[in-house]
Image 1 (tube, rainbow, N blue to C red):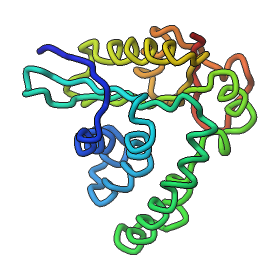
Image 2 (cartoon, helix red, strand yellow):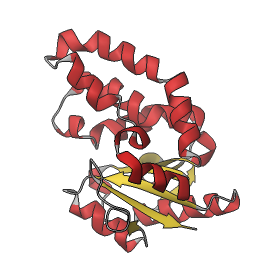
Image 3 (cartoon, rainbow, N blue to C red):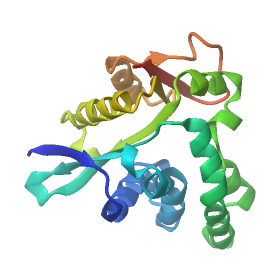
Length: 209
């Protein structure tokens, strides 16, 4: 297996959407009917509007199959405003279409998929987003875990952010995901819940560049 990291391209959309779904809680539960909604909320906006700041990992031994990605927005406040303007209406429409069919209350879907960290995670999250402006999401197919792909994606990501003058970045993770918590700590990130007060949900890690 040889892994190469490259810039994300519009043609990666199907692969990125699949990784996003498969690695999500809804994908792990087999909620196939939520596949497009998960991608709309958690990855497609970045691919459509932040492409130049995103990277994918390809396995050259599998005909350059995309096996992981790191999607990033260098300005969190701008990205969330852009999401509300350009993509949120698509998420709303998909929830309206799905709710009667999937046996989940519309209000519950809206609560989960309308979530915006700087609006829903309190003052600490807003302060972190001001000090460490970029944010990222990283996902890798489970059968490619523990092969150094995450480190390669982070390395490419940090080179890019430094090149564009970004002062730092952050991300959110569930406190129950100890494998991810250990990885982000190993990557030199700081648990901001311990230095900036409690959050309403999860943990925010951050790193200055």
